[in-house]
Image (cartoon, rainbow, N blue to C red; front, side):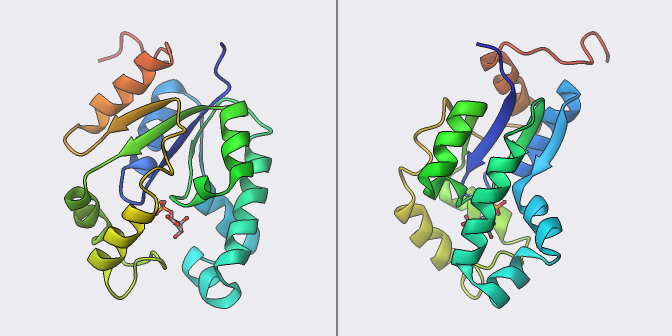
Length: 176
Ligand code: S3P
């Protein structure tokens, strides 16, 4: 199977954006972040979008974004943590990308997301909201082609695992 795109899925704080950036750089592929794509299309931040237009509007924009993004190839795509809740998104991902499910334990997730207060679904009580959403979504990421736990791995280790799984090689092969 030739791999057109790599789609990173996973709960908030599992490392999707960080791993996507390093992976895209390593492969020489285009980096795409679905949240940033939506922010550019809508002309406002995700937090503003949730506030002004509501979550269901955001979810429709997310379906449109993922559809449009997946028309292209050679991209490493970091998706928003809730994108997988929509069946259309899951189908499109599986059809057009190698889907990598990133995981992390609850403690690690809480630590990571606490650094960034901009996520609308976590605001007010990060710990409580993470625990609740993790339970609600406990099987939401199971459909990925491969699962990788990032809790105790370095960025390079995770990237190496993904490259090995996809039988992909770095454009910097041989470089120190
Ligand atoms: C969401 C995750 C966020 C963003 C939005 C909703 C979710 O992306 O799309 O706040 O439902 O899990 P990250 O996973 O990049 O934080």
